[in-house]
Image (cartoon, rainbow, N blue to C red; front, side, top):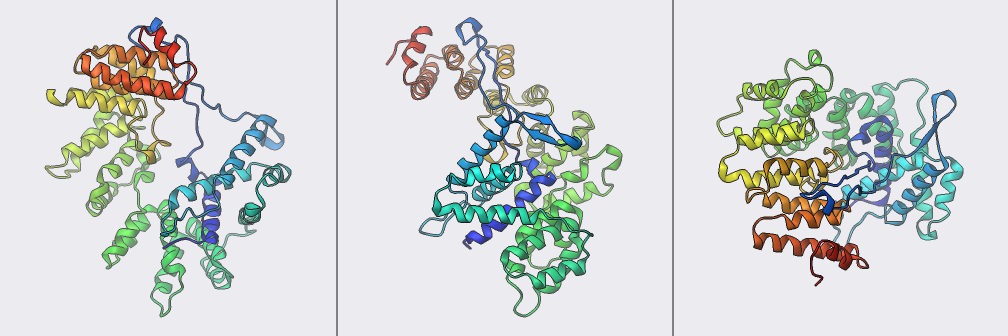
Length: 453
């Protein structure tokens, strides 16, 4: 189904509200990612050079413990917001065939809503005044909807109050905002209301088109409840849709003494219901557990789950994926120690790709550990520059390019032992340098002792 603009506006508002409550922490704004130099010959690389990344926005203490943004921070927020709004944030992204990247558009819109909330009315007007007339009206609609949604109720709403609001809703946006607040504050009441409304003759459209999004909010608020309800549903397709919203890692967010006694059973059941996501589900729980127990304890716990004779490969991958967010070097060394000799080269390359951010899937980049190219370079040196590490060195060289360190990239590419592999890597690095530095790339090659093409 293709979303209307009003649906996108309402969804963006809801995501914006969630941002203020902490949900958006799963998709944080860009954070500093500095790179230090590291190469086989440090003097041959860009000594002391560092990738320039945006610093955290500066703020100054204000009255009553509030934080007042500095003029520089305000300008940065205004600039990012204007760029987002001009980039098509208010467009549903659909093409002539009705296809659209809904998630990307929703994330852009939610980010816009978050930025709006940080600006004063006057600062907001400065941004909206720079928009083309063709989209300014819808931009103001987004602003108004977001502002209205932040109004808090004087007293907590009951299940009956929410039900009355659903009956009185004048449009789709009002319905969705009510569903969003309801799901966050009274998930059990909303689920019960939905079960009654969904089976009525001529059931309202929101029970089909909008409830899927609300399932996510209920799952986040109470994953145990959502999972229990899903397992009572007879329709396999609906059960699958509901279980998509269930992730058990929040149940392990606290101290070890607070972990659920029935957690193992729930996790095994969830993995059985979501076999295509089993590695990710286990990794999410392990990431929480590793904050309070050692990797060896976590590994023994995984073994105690008895997930089947074919589980070792994917459970070890989940273990390493979670472990490297805590201690990347120890995790990679443990996995490498258990790898067959014929797989070591590929394993090293995989570790380098994660260490340098090159192999992190796009949907995980914002929550993955920060890249540390210098530490990765040190690790490669500890293993030795050999045929076994040359595939990883090629990825490392590319990582230095992405970090804005062309001299380090060239130095590492030149260090590859095999002539054919070295030539291929140098050609790739040189092409990227030429594209990134069209005015100085020849001088960079001269400094590295390489002929310009």
